[in-house]
Image 1 (cartoon, one colour):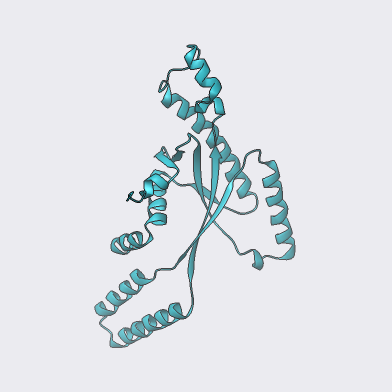
Image 2 (cartoon, rainbow, N blue to C red):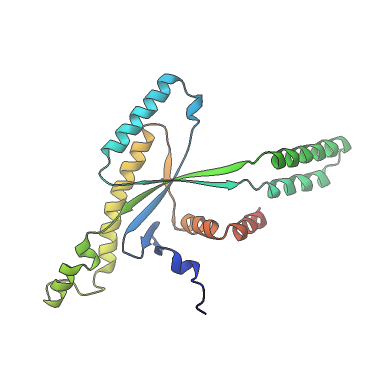
Length: 212
């Protein structure tokens, strides 16, 4: 019976290099974490201004982008544990009672309400031309001795592609800023943490709780 494929085999990511996702097909991605605001709380004029700027932002792009919203049930166990420790250390009996009542209130409220923690991301892509990825023409050139040897100048090719990608990233960051969204690219460590949490949610929560 064939063994189940590992998560790494199912992922399209080949590597994470210099704050950049390198996909198995050679394409690159940068992940921007974005701020948010409550659109419903804005006035009618402010809402119209946001919509207008968002429309201009999308129309000005000559490459695709992807919006991702990640939702996860809020884990308050570390917070409750810290309150319980504070309750033990408190010398005032009155404050101990108040902290205990507050802990009970938080537990009851969270049990009755499905509170979600949301994270917002924008994915900025760059895909090399077919000829760069080893298409038919590039293979023909290689046979004729006209193309680059396989593996030659890999670092320089990556840096050139990454430079073009980050030009796009700067454009997206500036465009988002125009209608009030702050954004910042995730670095290598943050990308590793993000994908580990996505594919190992239970283990990730244990790790975070242990750190806190």
